[in-house]
Length: 215
Image 1 (cartoon, one colour):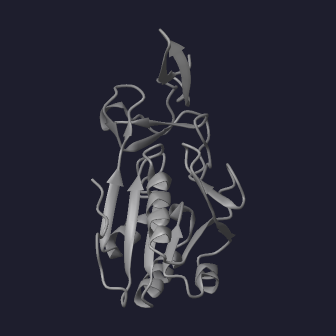
Image 2 (cartoon, one colour):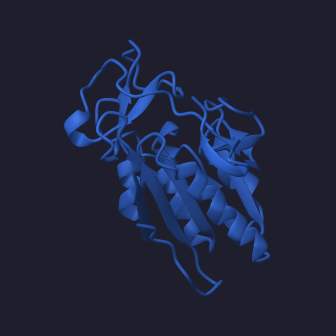
């Protein structure tokens, strides 16, 4: 369910949190909201933690390779210094920040800004991840997204680690995680059950162009 404000006066702020497991489309949704605010003529700033450099150092990039320019920050407090007169502040991968991100988000919203936050709500053990439960508690709007379970095809909200590593923070991609439903989730580490998720490609069948997964 997408829980996004359709209209609100411009003289006060609020917090929106988009959460879910790996591959559920959290960053994609953050980018969608940021673009809509930009089209509406609002100044938008996108930030992400310096820890996350998987795709780019100067862009926030979804698994589907949708991207927007972003600023790397080492601490949550830097976000306040960088936002200036921006109306909309987008924060990706919020689970990687410390608890200061909660006070920062409240401060920005109290200052009349729209704060859009995306992050993993649970870690690879299925436990609440970092400051995310506190951000969910203070948010006016919460959206929980789901992926598709690699084993059963059901809705997935767990991030199954498929490589041997016991660190809570493991910035990985398809090589390290896959989405799982509750009945298929086996922490801390399980063998891979699904095929790697491949991008869509075009090919021609009977002189008609179709979109399909490349084998």
